[in-house]
Image 1 (cartoon, rainbow, N blue to C red):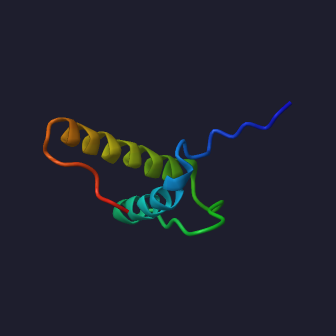
Image 2 (cartoon, rainbow, N blue to C red):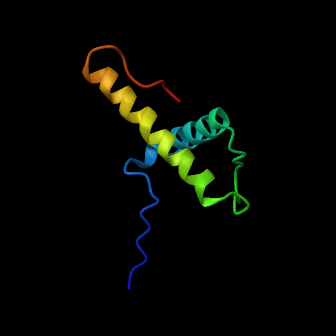
Length: 74
């Protein structure tokens, strides 16, 4: 059976920007995320980073669709 991880970027060239975005979001919400191993964090902490990233991406897309600008460049 092939190992198919869903934890890959749909656009590989965006990986660096997504990593920077993740670190910025973690900092904003007070999650002590570091590069590398983060096994000391709870599922709730990790999930809150991902959830807030999605929220910010949706807000940016809505702004862009309404003609009010888009997401910051990372």
